[in-house]
Image (cartoon, rainbow over all chains, first blue to last red; front, side, top):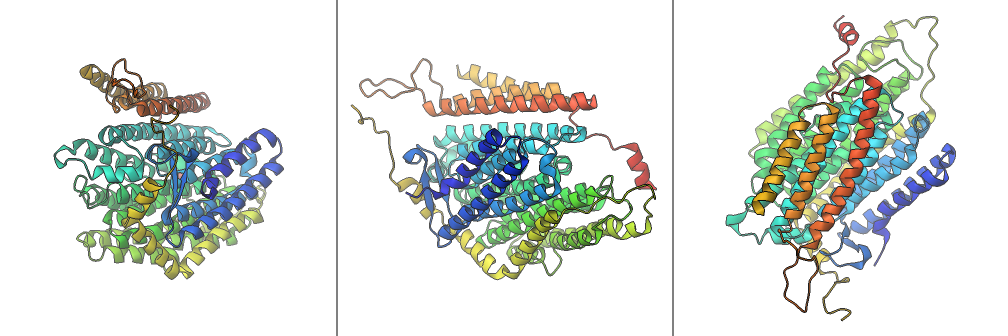
Length: 513
Length: 119
């Protein structure tokens, strides 16, 4: 049995305590270990993705205990591609944090960062619902620390909100898990997928409640309206690189919905049929609209970006809620695009902040490096709003194409296209106020010109933009891969049989007697 | 027995939710603690209620046994919720001491900001 698949979880779990214990007072050593750790993660993740690319499903039984008794990690196409995306995003964010000096503004940035990566990786790889809860908590508790990194009162206040909202979400998750266990007697996803089909059609009340509760929990994570209230202030107040890393966290919710609702509660399952169309689709369309309105109404650049994130999550969820193999493929393509674009925008907002007193959308004197920052903002905004030629446009085309034959087509077309228009207006207003109007404001003579952002910061943002360009240029192969990924999701039998039929240690009662 | 456990979960959840809706950090934290107690009891009940039964199978005698898995789940949930509550108490204390305000709502928009925006 190969052990590679557990490494994305183990490696950050080893690097983080090392950073805390051995390199506590040496920011240089911390940086070296943190970057080296993330580089190794990328290598491992790329290896896993390559291994899964031919459709192989890799199973790892922790302690060699057979499922459903033991906890399993499962690597299929979807989870390995998400792991790879997380690792690559982690590297860019880490480079930015080092370049901008954010990691020095408080203690334990690198250790918390590694723990955060560990939680995200675990959430993507686990094949057990309770284990998913545990990894959610790991990534959340690290995110609490990162969110209030370097302190400040507004940040702490936003932090309290964020933590409380997520605590309630965790409680709801536990209620859902309890209900599922009471109904089926298992929490292993593959085992669950088999057992929910055996439930008597007249006694599905419990499992339906559980399915809706679980959907609510994942919708909180994915910031779906009306469960999005935690997102704007916490992402806006979090340090720039942390908010950029959080761009993947909303996708964890989207991933969990895709995983659970293709395998455990698939659309054709009678007990929970109609859930997506009746609830998820309207909520997602409203998210898309609220996101666009928020972009237009925002008074500050950071708030504007957070609402753009809500809008793009709305787009992802619209696509997911159609629940056809074609739409899931489009959603996966859009998830990668939206993660990269949102992260780039958060980092650019942080660059803009470094030369100004705050991020309010009012003209202020031009700052050093404004031309390059403005150019990056321009490209990232084009990507985010989905104008040609970048991947946002292609992603939106795929989304529209996926909805073309469905009954919800008119709604999806209307909301997606209108919200894109509003987004374009909102972003161009912000960009022109921030970068063009600043030419007309004279800098007071006694006010020194602030230093331009560090080169490493530009490298990090440029890297994200370059990845977006790659995502656009290789859209054909990537979308082809996503189509096979989604085909694998809609035919979960190999996954289920791999998980349940691989032999491992079983505690048979005759043993040892 | 069933009635007692069910109503205990119900009362704990209702009280917890009421406190959460108070929107001040101390009641909200208390409310969340009550909610986690409720969910812990709920998890116990998810393995069916068995009184005085050991959580182990006995091959020699056909005894009733309690489901051991929910007990493990509850243990994990208790540890996690305890840690989380400790974290939120510290952050809330910091926010309260720093801003002399313990509401968990968004801060009201600064007046100067609003004026300049209007201008």
